[in-house]
Length: 360
Image 1: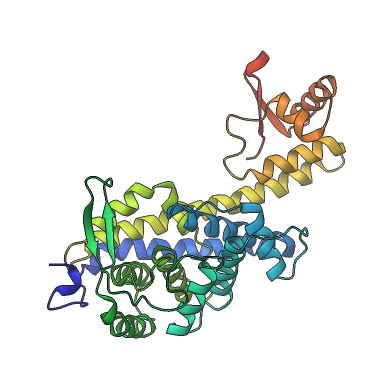
Image 2: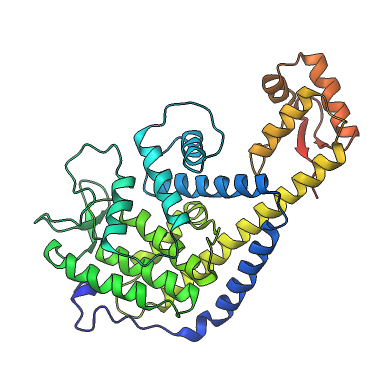
């Protein structure tokens, strides 16, 4: 018996008490995120939001095995937000997912509707030419199955409701989403994500839209875009995500909600780390004002673009030469100077020498 064949479907049950501490921590951290971002300049706020949305767009696609060009996604977002960007041509998939993320960000407070979901689906499927329903719920007679294993030994680990039931299922889902605004944030976000995935109303894109719905629920709780790096965090531990979904068999979804709450809290922690990284960047630039030449400024900017994890293994002299166009001798002098003025920290010796941002 599939979960939707249960006589009490879709009346999920769970222990609210196990989420109580997580809910309190989520609201506390949400306030910290909002307050910290207000310390940024207007330009820093815009760049931070675009960076986070770009990561969410590319990572939510990557979870489903679709690799997007990050720079194209970001340029598309900047154009749609009326900000400066280069004039590159944006591929359809990158334009579509960036449009959906901007729409989610801009209209988080609006009630959910079939039309909103169809609009998101058309954006996500932008450029697709294969035979799938786009901007409409699935209608095929074939069962919608989630299959694991190889082609010689496939295993159906979930089958969604037949397509002729989808309109009624989605009517109930949309009513639940719009009628649960007073539900606790983590409880509601985890519930709507799982419920939507179980219905699996579209031919493709269900996971991406389910994650967007969770973000919408979180944003509605705090009254503004949540800036939670949810897809980024899920992608980093993708096996755990699919394992948690696969373990849902009955209507008691307590274990799923605990997993999802923990994931959201990890995502919040990631966002807070990014905010701290930007504040550290600002302090470092303030401290180094007037002390860097154009080559050093170019390399430092490139290092910051790598984000909180920096260059894998650290910056090498060869990296410096490639980024700045400097000769070997000039790179050696520049790097020595950047260590002395506190811009970089040096580790290793000789060919193992690497440089890291000196941020505290």
